[in-house]
Image (cartoon, rainbow, N blue to C red):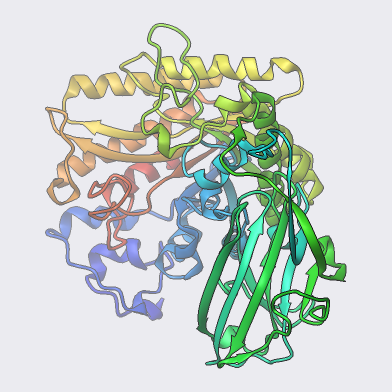
Length: 598
């Protein structure tokens, strides 16, 4: 342990920072402050790492995993978060990086690079990953999803309503495919004889249109199949009317050696036709394109279309095309919207399962499905009608009905197996919050249990488990706190009665004074920290007491450290097992006390 000799205030913080308990190298440069009183924290020195108590546990299920939520990017840095996670936990949940909006762009393209890196890092550390989340109404790409169900234009000639308009114009036409795997499966390339060099100045201009409105990304290539750089010449927006696109920039090192710009032209909901004309590409002021007006076919050496999955063919020149007159549209039918969104769920889940390659064996298949009312009966499902900020959320249920749960369950099982997973290993959870609530006597959980029975009534859908988030608060008012604890017990009893796997999926804890006001980290006393530690001990102990071993699937601590001021999650609250400087808190001891009893 000599490599840890530079620790400041080692006596008080050794187990938290380094010591013989937590294997963290503190010579990396972050500093800690001396606690107000060393003596009152010294008892934390005697604790081992969290997961060390499970290694000798006799009551816990062999499927039980002690987990932690973190940012995949923080874990990738292989600093304090990486070492604390690996030393104390068995499983990780990515806070945001595996959610739809983190991966799906405005044009529908999907980037799983962070997910793949996260999995590689987890494999190297022998850590499992809990998937969060496949279907949710929050953190969705609204622009892309709404485009899939937008009104469709109809062809109308002002002089002959209902008829298409034929336009005479020589230009390049490239057709996309529908329902493809990736936006780059079909590309239009602007090829040059030039070799791009770092520092080259480029200018691109062209006239563009498409049958349907679209926004597409671009790349830089050396040649067929020799991708260089994802940014290319920017994002090009197409409308049913001709518009001029202009862009310019300086080649960076990642573009050096290139010969072409590629346009990712695939739509995912329907085929589209793209048209290009009057193309000019200048490198350091020199025009690279011949016959930019498209008057004849001698441009074929400059332009090629990459058909789906790699077949290279010359661009197609057309002398006329059918144009849809703008300003006339009809809404999609409910059936058409359901079909488009079902296809999108399949595309998304297939992409995620392919990226994970069977490594992620447990998922929040649907997150936060149940609303908070109506009171006195089974609660409704979340929808635009009963949720706040509906313009910032996308409710799959509003378009897919009850099937918004059945559909992701089906696709998760299908593509988990297709991409290398053993079907027997896959566990799908529905995850929700306020299941321990005392103000409605656990009515939200009772409603969720009824909904699960309804979803499974088709004889095909199987939901393996229930995740309870438990973003709880310790109340200094004894009567309030007693009610909270009683309803934690009721929740666990109801969960146990389902026979399903049970996971405390997002455990963290704040504290409130006798009047119910939140107490910030800077104002929490040592005695209040000890009270929070006892509540942690209570929750974890009751989980093991009430949930049968065969149903115990895990507990995930949602916050490693206290939340910083200005954070988007419980800002300034003492929600961690470690403080902001990675020093153990009494909450850590309470968690260990519960685990040590198993």
